[in-house]
Length: 433
Image 1 (cartoon, rainbow, N blue to C red):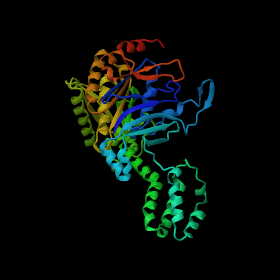
Image 2 (cartoon, one colour):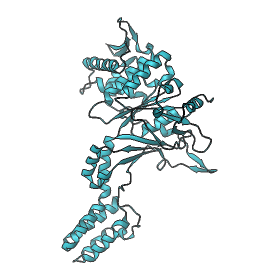
Image 3 (cartoon, rainbow, N blue to C red):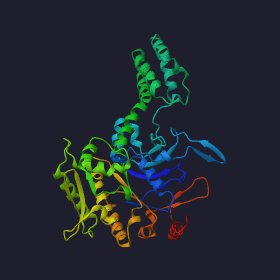
Image 4 (cartoon, one colour):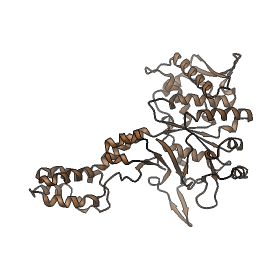
């Protein structure tokens, strides 16, 4: 599946971003401080958070009211969609969906929305996921008149008397779906041969919602997951072995625990014991990825395990080891990204999209060049969204990669759009705040 475009709305900064599309490899979201870059990334992440971060709801700070044309209106968290995305459907997924319902062979785009209360909805664009009563009521009338044994009608009327009161626009699902299906199955022995086909096609329409629910489960398992990273979520120097063992038994409850859980996922055996060889293998894998995506980086990751403490170091070519919390920020960023790649690039998992929140804030000019080169190489393997306020980063990006966060004086707040001229970026990033 390909993440094609999205829209963020409801936040006090980004009230309605409008639709914006993505570059297939690296999308740069450029905006000054306070323009809503973090809100944008966390909103995008909510569409389908990586399992390491799926219990962190970024919408808890959303306002309870919004103003429209001078009127104050209360927001219903159960109905208000805060993030909306459109994915294109791959041929492989389309074929899997068509096995559930043949009409889904026509699936081209899929719409996914996340509400403020953290509930999510999914639509197959231009394909209704349930049948309206008006579409099948004529068939029920025809079948009722064709029944050879009129006593079969009694079950229909007594079992579900509300069916005769269904509104024309009402969707057939839940109780009405089961009641209509039971009636159709009950009358089939009393129909003539010429009405059996009508009964079968009508039953197929009644069960459409049930089939589409099954299709949506298949779809959900294929959605790309989004992993959010910021400077305060990087790999730390020390880890408690006891905490790692405990973390293996549960999912992270906050976004800050995601790095710890990722380590536990890779280092703890199924029998809940810390395996030293797994630590060595993980460190080796991280170093191989460092060499692949950042060949100019000479430092490597090393570790020590003593008593209840697992410690990571930056090791130079001369063999000198520096505690990770004292290492240069590019190295901490690089090893953290390589650590998460261990989870993100497994063949058994859907695609992972990385969301990087202003990693350049703690990097000097030389380190920024190194980090930028690493990200460019990495983006050929995994899709990356990079939110930045740095003109240096923007200058090295192609115009088709950049989406500009522009504050507006109207009710929509910050909008997100592609740029026409490079001068536009300079003007926005130079604005005072």
